[in-house]
Image (cartoon, rainbow, N blue to C red; front, side):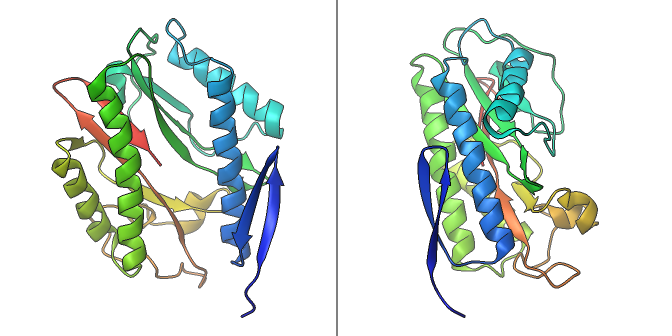
Amino acid sequence: FFKFEYMIIIGNKKYVLKYMNTTKSKLIEAEAKAKDLFQETVKRNWISPGISEDELSKKIHALAFEMFQTKTHWHKRIVRSGKNTLLPYSKNPPNRVLSEDDILFFDFGPVFEKWEADLGRTYVLGEDPRKHELKKDVEECWTIGRDFFRSNKSMTGAELYSYVCKLAAKRSWGFGNEHCGHLIGKFPHERIQGDKTLNYIHPQNHTPMNEPDKNGNPREWILEIHFIDESLQIGGFFE
């Protein structure tokens, strides 16, 4: 194979990418746009006490169209705050209004030119040290988990899930979900892949993560870190 680098420009930012298959390069482009979407949300000062989760979610949806002309999201948009941050993606808690010294997380999956992005970020209002520690830990442990996977890409989803749960315990958090990530790809990846357990970094997924899909194509993964403290009723999320 030839090795080379190429540059993509998204907004006013430049990204240099090494040679890779088309799927991975398209997913990286989509993820870069999702990051820009989150940064613009922060820049517009929408994340503030008094706004509801639903209202903030709708603003982000409209912003995605304003910035990238996309209205398609491959999964439900999530803005969770306060005690709602304890709950995983599958739950649907009542709408909540952000308060002073709140913690919240975002999980949204816009589709850019038929390619899925998936972004999770935690945001803290105020100066509560435990909440800021949680935000820092989910970000750091995502990197640690990613590097662990890169050290042995033939590990199973069950092995990576077990490792991530141990990371949570090591930092005195609980882990907040039954899985710690999933496949990502060309929309809609879930209907293409079939078996739901094999779509996830799940304790019952004993298939090597670098095994190709049923069509012989490489599979690409998104890692999710969701740490919680049930006594404080707070959670943090990063993907």
